[in-house]
Amino acid sequence: YSLNQVLYLDDVHFTNNYAGVSSILFSDYANSGGAIWFSNTNTIGVSRILHSTFTNNFILSGWGGAVFISDSPEGIFIYDVRFLGNSALSSYTYVGQGGAIMTSHDTVLEVSNCHFQNNTALPRTDAQNKPYTLSGAGGAVYIQSANVTLTNNTFTQNIVVSGQFDAGSLG
Image 1: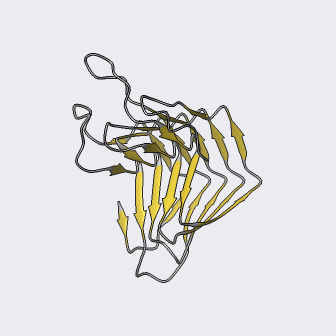
Image 2: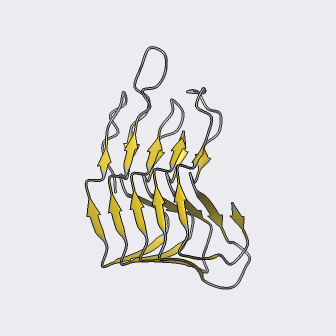
Image 3: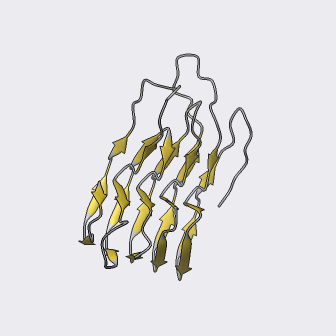
């Protein structure tokens, strides 16, 4: 969790991290950022994530399977990063958004030379009777009220699956 700090990560590997409570399908709050939750409302300076890998991170009932970025008008730059097999899973209360990245609320984000593969936004089916929950949105990236530039990235086999409420896929 990074709040009001300039973040600089280079050659860092995040694997098998998660946020959320696995036993609660009716969550009263959303969870964010399976590996990183980043918000920078007060600090001057551009944050950077460079030459890194996010693998098999997930969020239960919320946003950003690997990375959640919000309220960051100074900007964050993500360069040469691999996002592999990350997931945002929904609950009955919150849609899983952004299998790899979810960004919102006046954030300035630039993503360049990155690879997104096998990331998912899915309904949860792990309850005892295996009911579907809300749908997922944005298999690789979900953008809401943000200024985002995507340059020279590859997107391979990222998936959104609709659940009980059939919200469909968004990107």
